Image (cartoon, rainbow, N blue to C red):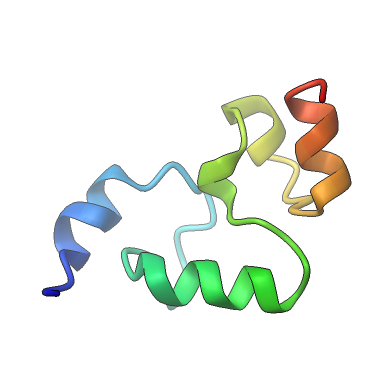
Length: 64
Protein backbone atom coordinates (compact mmCIF):
# COMPACT_ATOMS: atom_id res chain seq x y z
CA UNK A 1 0.00 0.00 0.00
CA UNK A 2 1.29 3.43 -0.89
CA UNK A 3 1.57 5.95 1.96
CA UNK A 4 -0.43 9.11 1.39
CA UNK A 5 1.66 11.25 3.73
CA UNK A 6 0.88 14.66 2.13
CA UNK A 7 -2.90 14.21 2.27
CA UNK A 8 -2.73 12.49 5.67
CA UNK A 9 -0.70 15.38 7.11
CA UNK A 10 -3.05 17.95 5.60
CA UNK A 11 -6.10 16.24 7.13
CA UNK A 12 -4.47 15.32 10.47
CA UNK A 13 -6.48 16.58 13.46
CA UNK A 14 -3.52 16.44 15.85
CA UNK A 15 -2.33 19.88 16.95
CA UNK A 16 1.22 18.65 17.67
CA UNK A 17 2.49 19.76 14.26
CA UNK A 18 6.19 19.15 14.88
CA UNK A 19 5.70 15.38 15.28
CA UNK A 20 7.95 13.32 13.00
CA UNK A 21 5.07 10.88 12.43
CA UNK A 22 2.62 13.52 11.20
CA UNK A 23 1.02 12.06 8.08
CA UNK A 24 2.51 8.62 8.73
CA UNK A 25 -0.62 7.17 10.31
CA UNK A 26 0.69 3.59 10.59
CA UNK A 27 3.80 4.75 12.47
CA UNK A 28 1.81 7.20 14.60
CA UNK A 29 -0.68 4.55 15.67
CA UNK A 30 2.08 2.01 16.37
CA UNK A 31 4.02 4.49 18.54
CA UNK A 32 0.97 5.49 20.57
CA UNK A 33 -0.26 1.92 21.06
CA UNK A 34 3.22 0.87 22.20
CA UNK A 35 2.96 3.60 24.85
CA UNK A 36 -0.53 2.36 25.82
CA UNK A 37 -2.23 5.44 24.42
CA UNK A 38 -4.16 6.59 21.35
CA UNK A 39 -3.21 9.20 18.74
CA UNK A 40 -4.75 12.67 18.79
CA UNK A 41 -6.99 11.93 15.81
CA UNK A 42 -9.08 9.64 18.07
CA UNK A 43 -10.10 12.52 20.34
CA UNK A 44 -12.61 15.34 19.89
CA UNK A 45 -10.84 18.71 19.32
CA UNK A 46 -11.27 20.06 22.85
CA UNK A 47 -9.81 16.88 24.40
CA UNK A 48 -7.04 16.53 21.81
CA UNK A 49 -5.60 19.94 22.75
CA UNK A 50 -4.66 18.82 26.28
CA UNK A 51 -2.28 16.14 24.89
CA UNK A 52 -3.44 13.44 27.34
CA UNK A 53 -3.54 10.45 24.98
CA UNK A 54 -4.35 7.84 27.64
CA UNK A 55 -7.19 5.35 27.27
CA UNK A 56 -8.79 6.95 30.35
CA UNK A 57 -8.74 10.38 28.70
CA UNK A 58 -10.29 8.82 25.60
CA UNK A 59 -13.11 7.29 27.65
CA UNK A 60 -13.73 10.58 29.49
CA UNK A 61 -13.70 12.59 26.26
CA UNK A 62 -16.31 10.34 24.67
CA UNK A 63 -18.09 9.72 28.01
CA UNK A 64 -17.70 5.95 27.78
